[in-house]
Image (cartoon, rainbow, N blue to C red; front, side, top):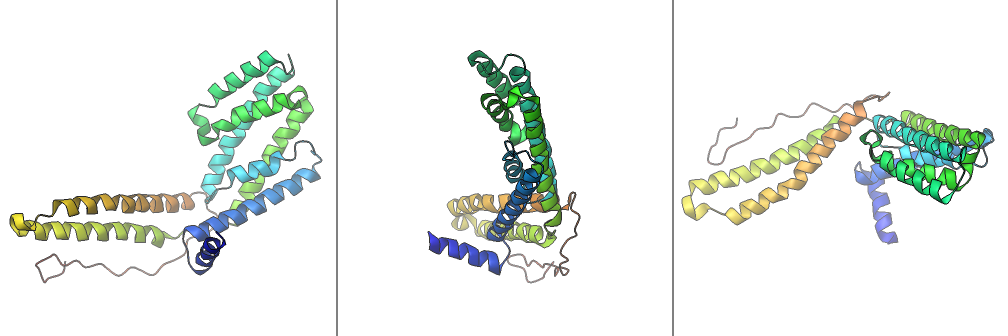
Length: 257
């Protein structure tokens, strides 16, 4: 286990890739959650301060745009959950029937597409607030919402300061890898078809084409990731040298195009 961890740490230190991005996310989460906790404690909301670092951890994302999107959805879900809990707690209090009805309504409301993946937080906050007694106090509900704002703001600030560099070369390399795989496969197919029935290797071609699925997903993800990084990014991109024009020599031909 520790050997694998050491290998991942070494890869994160030596080159860009999944391991380094994971390390950056860990750093961002640590900074954002600590900042949210410090600010929350300074505001004196001792009973609800846990929501500040909790929110920060949930909305930190690799890109600034991702954090803005997720923080907006999370805050909307929390506000909706707190509102529902407050309606129950400030009127009838925590009863078996009111808790059950509240949870049912919150679960249904959380399915709205507007909340995205944060929709699950709506019933979580509603149930926590009512069962814990927070919903029976307008002041406690206000502190809860304040801590959510503190956590979201801490996450956004951290992501703005530690905004990822935009590297179009990463997306370019992923697309080139896909293009190289397609070129290799179509070249083999063209050569086999010229040889007639003897050159047909259908099983191999099917396996090779299936193997390109991973390259397609990788290229799509790389392009999407860099596109997200350009949105709302206060920094710039890492310039890359102009790529050397690719040449392709068709099988059986000696002239490049």
